Picture 1 (cartoon, rainbow, N blue to C red):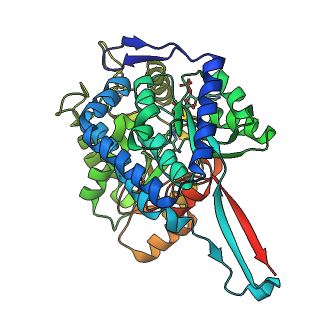
Picture 2 (picture 1 turned 180 degrees about the horizontal axis):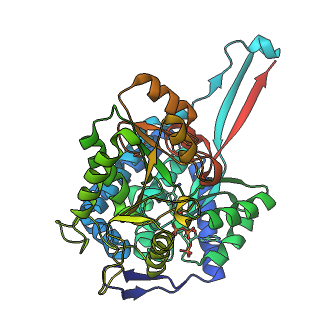
Picture 3 (picture 1 turned 180 degrees about the vertical axis):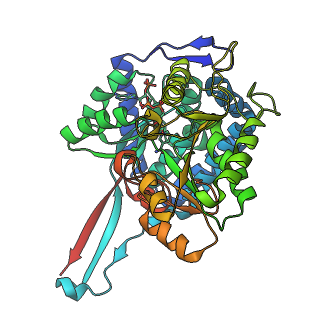
Length: 458
Ligand code: NAP
């Protein structure tokens, strides 16, 4: 795949970039290794100062950076700006909390292990490779990089090939905040070059956010090398609506949860499981709200939904819908791509789905919702858990027994009750099953790339 900015709103290639050759990749990994050695002699307060300065730069440049994100992957400009500001917030969060999250953890009763003193210490691993997707070009990277750098690790980034300008912005941002040169380096390389980077002795671990096939490949190379990996993969999150829910609020949130980021979010709600007692009412509300969305130029403030990021993404989405419709699905809204330049798809709602349709098991990466009628909470759980994914989930109910039941029974890395899934710096984020392993954000995220060293003193 060429490394290029291609505007998904027009299909036009804006700019192509030359990939780094092996010598340049080697040089950049070397810089990251030197920066790791330099960070060894810094304390949390120093790194926190640099991280806050980096956050300030991002805040100040939010408008111009947001325009890059929208140009390269098509999210509405207001959402792009919110993403930039969220990155700065995450930087400040780790500037404030890293030292506490990584403080020595003494054993309350060291005599139980025959020691006068015993504790666990968190220490950085070294250079970590981040393989990242285009859908949140800044956030996915910063959610890894901010805690990694605060822990004293350094990073090299292999970003998705369609967001090179975002990747190059990230190449210098931490240095501009004061971090040593090389603390975070972008490698402009294709996915085939990832193997050699993981195999490089200076690279100690890898984190990948992306699709299941990419995760499978990267984790197996890391496994072969006995290097730590974290995988944040796809999802097909259920959004369950029960009779006690506030239906109007549920339908409004359901639309937002489905079409945020033009429907291309791992944690977007993709399958809507609605109790039969309120199904018809909810379906009518939801479909009407989906039909009312404004699809168009993502630079325009009036736009709710921009284009799908790539031509192949649009083709994949259309194939899933066409397959379902050919096998008897009912189209309650949309159902087709929009003619003209750019890769736009109508906000779509499908119902009357059957097990032979691909959409039942596969992730829809675009503004397409599938609607299921469920008889009771047990059937909701059966359908919710039937995909191979287990990223997040949402449940709308005002019955506390039901709330406990869903929180316990959903196979997912998170359950949001009466809301939609959002990632917060304060909450651990990650999935189970084919959605990956490991956690980002919160204390768990910063500890993923640390050596947890037990220290025992007799
Ligand atoms: P993708 O094709 O897997 O690409 C992600 C990154 O992996 C890109 O940098 C890509 O590089 C690279 N890559 C692809 N195949 C690779 C391979 N075999 N070896 C090494 N690197 C490889 O995913 P995407 O289409 O960009 O993103 C969409 C997917 O990401 C969806 O499934 C979505 O749910 C998931 N996602 C998950 C999370 C989460 O937190 N769980 C967040 C966001 C997105 P190239 O661009 O050069 O191919």
